[in-house]
Image 1 (cartoon, rainbow, N blue to C red):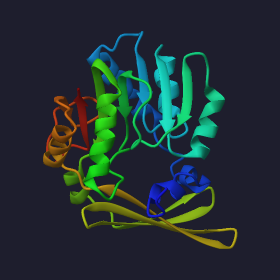
Image 2: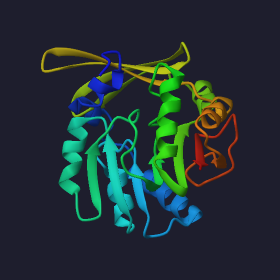
Image 3: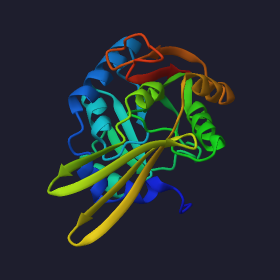
Image 4: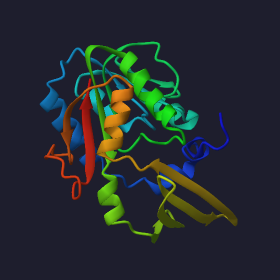
Length: 241
């Protein structure tokens, strides 16, 4: 793995899960229910949650009656997720840039889990892999942040205290990326990580999907599936095939 891939180290550390332990599962489950109902995905479908982290969305999708596979690059996350496996839920280690060995009825890329890579070709490769990994009439649900709104409301610096650890968060938009610098101390040691998500607006996404041979079916602006507003919407959500 390329040492410049920030997500390899950060997603594998326990501090990543500490910092984001208060993520709102209600929002996640609301969105999943809404999009499942809207798309009327048959109960017999095999769904892929990519990347899946520790499996919280995979577990919820499985609870709705679907056969679900969760896949992620982080060994630690997959190891934790495997504790929840059952006859219709499994987890595996996977790099999104590698071709799929199984076809799925739908792929879920949730909560800004895209745009990690320096080179556009890698992001397009991920989409091509998903396209090739879908059954005929299969769908990709891709949920990203609305970068225009993020830039408009950017909080440049804040301190977040979780489990007694004071995380110093600094945000900037630089070189085509939304960057979050994370520094903190724990048990006498200093740590520094960064998160980098590409500044992908609607125009850029359209070019990506076109390059990957995918067609946009629907665009939404939030987890209630409201119409997308380029300036004020919180999210940029696609359903493509």
